[in-house]
Image 1 (spheres, rainbow, N blue to C red):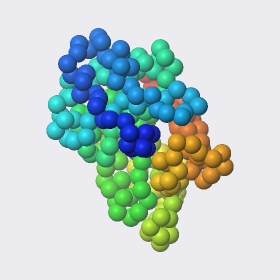
Image 2: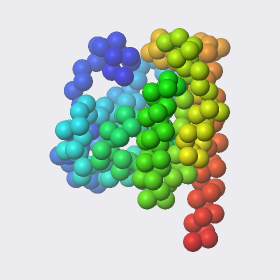
Image 3: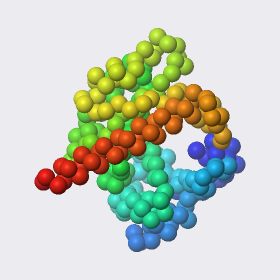
Image 4: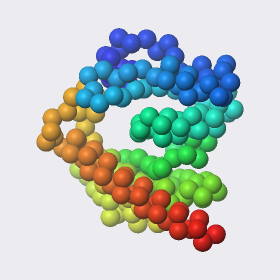
Amino acid sequence: MLCIGWQGAHPHNRSVLDLAGHPTNEYVARVWELAIPLPQRPRGAWLVPTVGNVAQMRSLVSVFGPLAEALAQISRESHVDVLVDLGRLGAAGPSTQLWSHADSVLLFTDTTLSALNTLAVGAPVLADELDAIGARHRLAVVPVLGDAKGESHRPYGAREISGITSGIPVLAGVARDGKAAGSRTWGKRGRYPLSVRRLIGAVDQHTRGANEYLAVAGGGA
């Protein structure tokens, strides 16, 4: 993100590691201090840099729980959509504590055979982890579609993918377009921005459905 937003011109001189030196009741204010405004955006958007390796991730085991609460408070009080990238499946470590306040948990996957094999093994494990905190129905899979490596390497669509996700819903896929994803501005009718808009609508619908299900389940408990 630092490379995409500022073409490498912004120093990577802050991250959530800084939170470890402050009391948890200051996290909301500290997160805003760490947040870097993204340039040339029609609406306000910010980036909070995280850590780059597993060792640093483990050192934040006591930070992620209070950070999840702080981000949820920011979302409620400032009407900000908070997006958290936890990295590769199985490598998130203690940062999975951030799931406790998530409206949706999205698992993005390539559509090559090897990626789908990983999905078939890893998705049920992730679903069980979310089930332990009552959030299984917040999970959905998002395929990254396209034939950048040749059509024969990615012959699978949402219908085929839904057959290996153990009942986890598969949402509208997002188009594979590295150039558009790295651009500061999008055209209105390009394949990538259209797919992102469709995905946003699908995520909104998925979140509403999960909230309704959990409200009914909670009311009957």
